[in-house]
Length: 493
Image 1 (tube, rainbow, N blue to C red):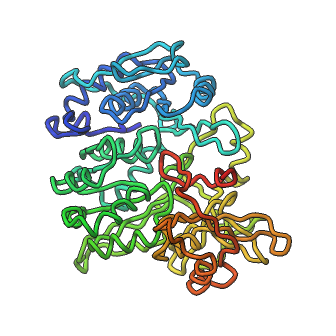
Image 2: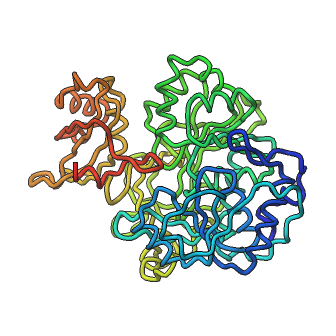
C-alpha cells in the first residue's frame, strides 16, 4: 500500500511537523525518532501507548504505524478496572510511554519502551503493512458494558483523512492548533495524523485555553480543531477579549466535533468574528462521515461554494460515504424534508473492521447489506444537509405519538438568557409514553428561570409538543473527557 506519511520520506526535512509547548520536531527529526522506534517494533503486533498530551505520544503512534504494528491508545485517566479490561482484551506485547512517566501497577507486567523525541534526523523504514492491517484499536466508552475495541484498519485512516483534505482543502501549508486528548480519534487521528499525512504542522496546546488559541492563531496557525466545550469558552470570552476575536478572524478553518455545537455558541462566534464554525460528524467505529465543505471568504465565482457552514447541521456525507436514514423497522426514509427522523446507517471504506474479540457485537452492528448502525438519529434537509437530533438510546423521546430529538430542544433552551447549560432527556409518563425533562444550569443560580417560562420559550420556537414538562436545576452537567454530556449519569443525580 502507499505510505500513510509520504511527507516523512519525501517532504522538506526542515519543516516543523509537531510542536508541543516549547518542544518541537521537524519532519527530519520525526523521521529519525519514529524510524528508530519502528525498527524496535517490527513484528510486535499490538502495542499499548500511554497517551499523554506530549510530543512522545505522537512519536510513539507514528513509529508503531511505520512498523506495521497496531497502536492501542490508553487514556491516562482510566481507572484500574477499565485498564485491566483493555489490556486483557487487546493483549499488547509492550507499552510505549514517555520517559519518567509513572504508570499504574496494572501495566507493570508489560515490557516498557521509553519513547525519545531526540534521535536526530534519519530515514524512515518502508511501510509494508496492507490496507486492511489494523492501525489503531480504540476503545469505545462502555455505557452498556465494558468498552469495546474498535479495530481501525490503515485504509480507514487514509480514506478519512483524504476525504477531509478534499472537503476542507487541507494542504501542507496549513498549521493546526488543538488541545485535544490523544487517546481519542479526534485529537489523535484528525489532530496529529491528519497534519502529518498532509505534510503540514500541528501545534498542541497541552491544555486548552483561549489565550493559547489566540497566541497560536496570531502566530500563523490557520486551523483550529475543538469540541463544543472549547467553543463555548471561546464564545463566552469573546465580548471581553478583542485579541481573541482578532485571532479567530485570521483562522482559515474553525472545526468542531465529538458532540453537537449549540446553535447559540455558533451564532455568537460568527457575529463576533465573521467566521462560521464547521461541524463534522463521525464516530470511533466510522471515523469521519459528514462535514460542511470549506469555502474561502468572499469566494471568487470560480471557487467551490457548495458547503456554507450552517448552524445545527453537520453538512453532507464525505466522498466515499454512503449514508441513509431508516425507520425502526429498517425501512429507508427517502424524504429530505427536515422533519422525518431516522437512524443514521453508513457504509464505506472509512469503517472499522470489527470489535476485537466480539463477533457477536460486530454482527449486531451491521445490517445484512453491510451498513453500520450508528445509533444516531437525524433528519435531512431538502438540500441533503444532515441535522443530528440525538442518540437513539438517550436522545430520541417518544411523547404523545411524536418522535422528538433532544438536540433541537437543547438548542432552543440555550437561546434563553437565563440558561448557561442545558440537557434534555425523556422519562416514563403514563399518559404521553415519555415526558420531556430539561436539566438546566442557570446563568445566575440565585435567580433561575421558572419552569413555565422555559416551557413557553421552547413552545414558541419549536412546537407545543416539544416543550419540557419537567425542569430540574443543577450546578453543572456531568461530562466526559471530550466534553460530551453523560446523560445516563443524570438519572443518578
